Image 1: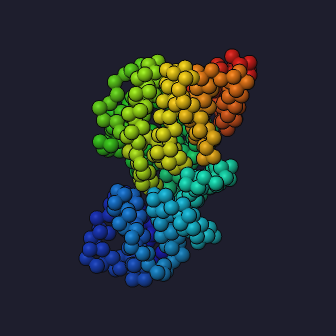
Image 2: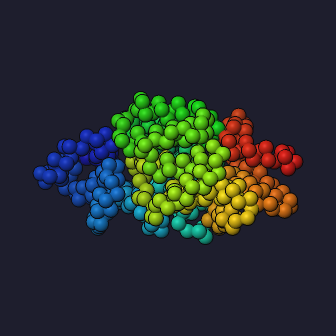
Image 3: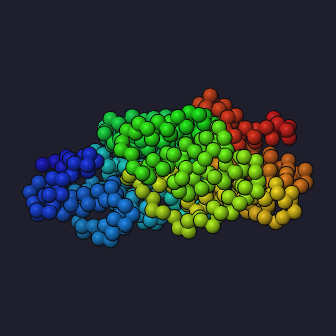
Length: 447
């Protein structure tokens, strides 16, 4: 009996949710008759840990990984699979050091073998690099982004080579997310389409819908708000996979955001929308031109900010936030929400006080923070906000020139990462904040 075929059969039942026979064999103590006595203990552990990562909630996952793995795996790639599962868990709880240790050993055990698990190990190594930037402020960003980009590409290539459509779907999804963070919107769009196609071919409709959602975000990022809205509504009305309440709420919330930008900033907020929707309400108030309303909405939101990060799910689509499995891989949830809310609050207070209040300058400390990341898709907006805050505060002309110049350079630098000319033009001219920054650059004779 081939060791890899035994594992792949077990994995296929897990991914297809056809595990009832396995569960029955485990409960009846006959599992060893199916997989072989020497493999039974190791495969039982692999099965249980992978199953809980695919379908379990945070409580289930934390409980399972309290149990130590088998002391000895009879087949090296089985040990690699155990290590990859542990890397997923450590990523989930934010322990980047242990995640890195586990995934590096998994790659070492898989690298010189004809083993489909190598693609997954590469994918996890890419995510670990993002996680390290997320939790260790002194870790170099260029190295982090370079390794994340490189190994996410390796993951896709190896999944294609091995013919593993399941892993290809997930690897392409995360490769798209990393490219979005880096700024190559066109390459992210290609990966997202590949993720959806591969997920459908593998019967992973859950990941197909998550990939479609990411495609919608990418349309939003390039200023194609109407197309993003149509896609979010289409996923809700005609999902590839079933529609849970959490998924429906998220899709309604992001449809609300696209309406804010494309139709009417004061359109009704969904009755259930979670933290994403509360943040978008702040955006809507500012875009409506009502600075008092924006300041009040930001003050309310800041009192409801989560104090701790949620568990990062890696092996199952996470619908609790539209920033999950993308921005939250790099930027802690509290940091992202605080920064976005703080930008709008500072803009509103600067407009209200006309430079007379100290609160209007509070946003600038974010730009001096050594954890501020050029891999944040909101990077150009934050520097545009800084310029507008200085403008409202009556700053000296030289400071205004510097602020606009710095903001425009960051916009241009991010644009150079887009490998398709048409997408680059769209990204520079269509998104609301990028277009406003472009106009400011013209006014200050930078172009």
